Image (cartoon, rainbow, N blue to C red; front, side):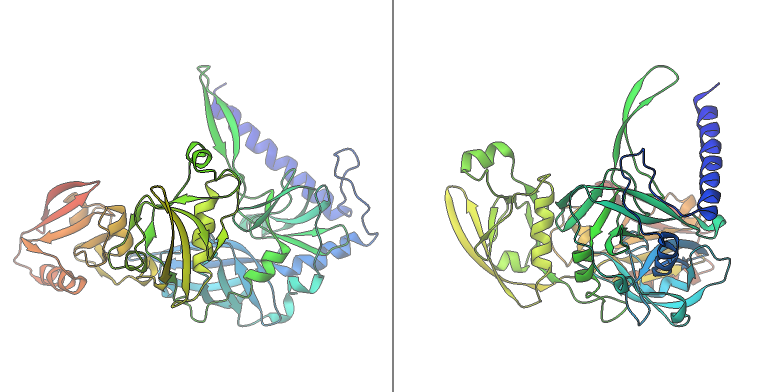
Length: 481
């Protein structure tokens, strides 16, 4: 029997066992088994308590409008106030698309075969990445999770959560439980249970039903893959439906205060230093920084607040406004901590960074600016006759190509229709289009005008594009006839 056949059988058996478990839950109150090491004193009315709390968790469905079609999208969210506002994880929706691309948003109660209720998109918080929705109907069908009180979680404490099945099961809720293993700052407090205790985007409670946390992306488990040939390969696996990681309740309460003012999102403070890396252990020991965090600056954007404040590549940041950077684990979290601290401030705020440059310690003062456009704000245009969608070239595109300034020309191929003229000509998504028919592209408006003329010219037989791909320049000939 091949490995793929064995996996297929295991998958079928797993579904059958899960279905049997779900039927058992419907027949009797869900409690933690006494033999699994997580048993706890549960209220006699636990089934009622469980069913009440499922009304705080919702299934969200919508369509993402692309250039030529719509793609369905689903996620799990949590209702957090009486206004019917809902929070979703950062990866629940494409953060690079403009808000008008999200269509027909529906919110469904768990386990019910209903159409659901309409909702509108409120935007994405730039600090955490979380998305927000608001119900426009059906508020009485749901209960804010903040109604259940807050749990003061402790290591070893029994916690239970609401797992959520996928759409064919009508997003059926089911019981999960475990014990709190640890809480780490990553850079905000994330709790970890011994095993899966909720679904990503769902919630956890303590034995008394108090709100304990919000399920985050699952942690990656290191496994050893053994092939039919006997070869062994290390792999990282994530569970799609269950997670043992969660945002603590205190941080959840902080983050639900960050609903954007508009669907496009709020203006973001910006320093203009990129590629920060944690200081190596050896250098930290040499500099006497073993007891605190430190990050090394890589690149400085031209004409940015960082450049104006004299921050330089290879500077080692050790303090923010006089406070030493905390010692975090793993140390790769430290650059994220620095970014979070800076983005928590306001545009125009003054901030002082203490850096080590060579053998000298210096205090540098900066005034935070406004971050340039991000992907969701980029201008876009689609040319159906060519099968090509373009967007403007952004600073983030330049950084990826070592162009550390905001006035770089050209446009980016954002969408390629399969079997189209540009597809046949070899153009690929992500290509940096620098010239069209010998004309250097300096602005998005210029590219839009040239491509519109090419599309409408019925006599033109070929267009020539000079593009950059993976740091290599290519000349592409697009046949138009």
